[in-house]
Every structure is written in structure tokens, then in C-alpha cells.
Image (cartoon, rainbow, N blue to C red; front, side, top):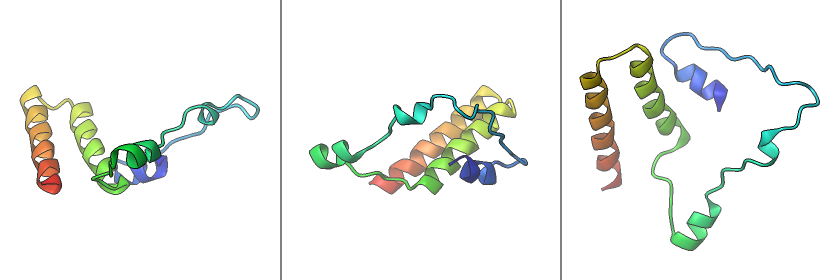
Length: 88
């Protein structure tokens, strides 16, 4: 996931693993799993990981470039409109 995100970031991005070799891992207890929502509610993801990362990174890129609040609002509204056009 980190490598996919780094590839999409407009500027060169990299990451380094600073975890200790024998450190307890959060990943053993933190699980993100949508199977119950699918099974019990019939929920399905609308966006794939590529589209999700693109939308997220576009917004954060503007935020970290210190875009004006009206520009962030325009980006947000544009992304909502794009998402709504996919889901309807």
C-alpha cells in the first residue's frame, strides 16, 4: 500500500522502515476487513484501491502545498461530484 501511494505522490516519495526487529506488531491486532459488511449488509466497495489512493493523495497534496481553503473546498466538492457520478 505504501509503495502504491508513493508511486502516485506528485513529488518523489519514499519511505523507510524503522521498526525494531522483535517489536510487537500492531498488524496482528488491527484488521480492516469488510467481509461482515458484505455478508450482512450487501455492501460493496465503489472504488478500487487505485482510485481511492488517487483521490486521497490529490487532496492531501493540495493540503500540504498549503492550498487556500477555497481551493481545498473546490477539490473536495469536485471529488464528491466525481464519486457521486460513479455511484449513481
